Image (tube, rainbow, N blue to C red):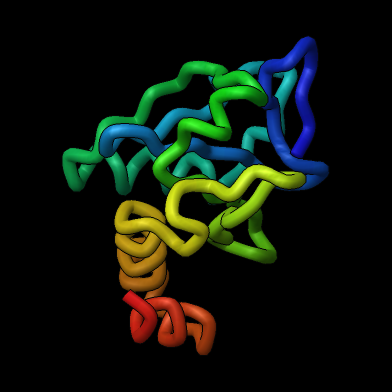
Length: 123
């Protein structure tokens, strides 16, 4: 996870998201971050399914207060983040919104993965 002056920007080839109180936060789409086709799809799915999508940078210290986190990329699609350095994110397992966005993304793309089946069994 990359940050500039304490503001989380992105991963080396992925976008970063923090979920707090049912809202998805991510760095605004500027030239400082990867545009990301999966990022655009996440914004679309959030808007379509009434999940607040807020383009607002969050700070590294906000991670300790996150309910859940995830990253997106073309290769990993939607990847839950359970721990950052020594900080456990939320309950230390994929959160409700992350799992829902995984489901919606897979449904939209017409795909299913072994990982997504495993995560749903854990829920």
